[in-house]
Length: 304
Image (cartoon, rainbow, N blue to C red; front, side, top):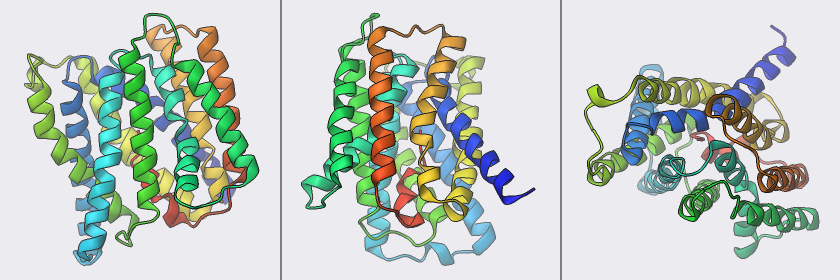
């Protein structure tokens, strides 16, 4: 297979698999306690990734300093915690709407850069300001969506942006698989007991979970995290980052389509307008950002 064919195969893998994780989260959360489901997902992913790294390279990638380990754990808690909030929010928010708010992460990154002394270009700042108008449109989408659910998705987007921001600036383990494995495992192990405590009367016995939820959880682990992650890592090493970053505004389109087809979600005028504003703004920001090293994108490896 030619390099171009591999590139497009990997891109469409990330487009579709990461865009479909919103549907997987919705299905998994139907009968599995939301926070606990996120904990199970990322604990398994963390064990799989760290186990794979140990088999291929031994313990060498895990011989990291305390600062790098602490940074990886901190970013893991932010990134995986963001995902847990999404599990909770999708019980009250359509997946198409949730994916659009999460698509604002590049806009929050520009804000974080600005308040910490960085100077994004005028086009990035203009695109960010315009993009938040789209986010404001989505805060009152109608259709019975709760304000609490929408607020949780906004907080999830901010937490994801903060974890991504710290990940590119704090010392990290040099190996991408090791970093992601530590992040997933640390976040998952924290979420498991928290999920048990917050489960209330919801069942923790897998025998009480529906087939749809089990399929959704398995899909998130295998396709959303492991296969999607593998494709993304290959892209980071072989394709310009600007092209890789296009997933940020393709994923919501996939999620919206799946929500309409499988969950019979409706697209209100507010959602349509918000989608147009946010996705066009994200496109402007991404195109006007300076090229980054692959390591600078490592925080996005866990994804949704």
